[in-house]
Image 1 (cartoon, rainbow, N blue to C red):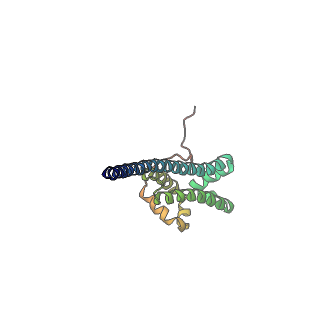
Image 2 (image 1 turned 90 degrees about the horizontal axis):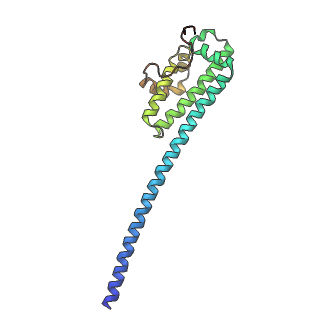
Length: 170
C-alpha cells in the first residue's frame, strides 16, 4: 500500500513539474509573440506616417502651380491671392494634421522620443517660415503641438526646396 501512495506522490510531483514547465514555455512564447506584434505595429505606424507625408508631397510635386503656391506661401505670403491663401492654408493643414498624428503617437508611447525629435525639429523649421507663422497663430487647435515643436528648435534639419540658394552656373 505504501508503494502505491509513493507512486501517486511521484506522479503528482512529475505532473506539477510538467505543468510549471508548460507555463514557463507558454510565457516565453507569449513574450516572443508580443515582441513580434510590437515590431509589426511600429512598422505599420512608420509606413502610415511616410505614406501620409508622401501623399501630400506627391500632390504638390505633381502640380507645378501647387509647388509654386507652396513656395510663395512659405516665403512671400503677400504675393498670394485670396484663393491661393485658402489653398495654402489647406496644404499647411495637411502637414499639421500629419504632425499632429505623430505627436499623438509619441504621447501614447507608440513613437520613440528619438524619432519624434526629428519630426518635431522638421516641423518647427517648417512653421518658422514667414508664410507659415500666421497659420500657426490662427490655428489654436494645434497649440499643444506648437509648444512641442518649440522644444526642438534646432536650426535647419531639412531643405524643403523653397527659395533655392543661388547656385553657380554649370
